[in-house]
Length: 463
Picture 1 (cartoon, rainbow, N blue to C red):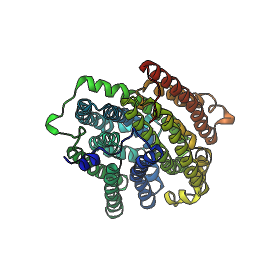
Picture 2 (tube, rainbow, N blue to C red):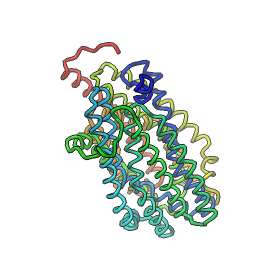
Picture 3 (cartoon, rainbow, N blue to C red):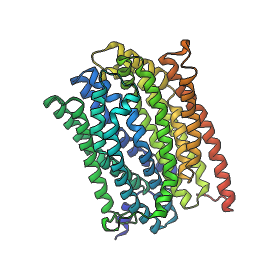
Picture 4 (cartoon, helix red, strand yellow):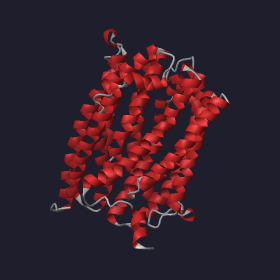
């Protein structure tokens, strides 16, 4: 293998500077990839809203928080895989990398089977628990059942992409999602407009595109020329390495699921304001999602940079990575969040064409979320920093208390008061929870960094 081929296969070196340039080179493809993933759902909503009506739009939108709740536990394991690969690369431990890769893919297969069975068989029951409006509960259940039928390729793609990013390759997942995104949009149009399949059509389009992305990312792993190469005959679950993946990934998954519980509870509360409010909230949430994935990309960047530097024991790079990521995510959040709010009505009208009242509901949500959304980005970066350092319990505990606990407490106390039983009261709980959680995570990072340096007995050295 030539030096040029090896360097290309390895991707970016995340342990040496210049960090400003490398962080942005690493993050921009993740941002683009995340936006493409959101376009899967956005294409669903736009097509179904324009060609199948408000009821179908609400049916698809009402499933988002519930799907995230069910899926996040297993997605968290992919976080653990990425962190362990990153730390193995930093430590130059090829055996650790090999075992992690060949444990991750079978784990994704098992997780996909479990999610398929649970999602297909219990979708209607879960939607009933959420008080989904009767007008579209059957359509929502149909969408979820088809969506969960494609859960195996969904998980395989996410685990594979996590491994590639940990190795410094963020461009390949972008290319694969670009191709899959084109397929998704084309199939949406064919299934909904030509065959009049409504929510079933957009669900089938989504899982078809996910299958394509899955095939491409697995093919990339099998053609790598380093320790991240996937060899089908060597796939097996290494118990100790699975435990190490779970040690990082399960708290991340639990955090994601509990985070989704708070969103499910808020969605259930919004459902009580009627189908028009649900449609407006769905459209606004989808627009905000584009801002969120751009900011959350720095969470993944922080996690992978910290993972490699932790493996290499380059603790002196921690603060540089932290401040670059915080400044970057703050700037992105302010620009994109503020821009979305300024053009809120125009953006909402892309999704909603037959209900001015639903657009007003959407503008209300965006006025409480978009302008200060950057605080959520700061919070997520801190969580990524801690996970990359190998600490997953701390961000889980802090986020569960600061975000989930506060929002659930808000719903069962303040929101139940007659004078505060409004959508505005629900939405204000978001920024309050972000601020409190960010501060707590920052303190946790400073304490853990000091402890790790002291334990290693190292004197900080220049990068």
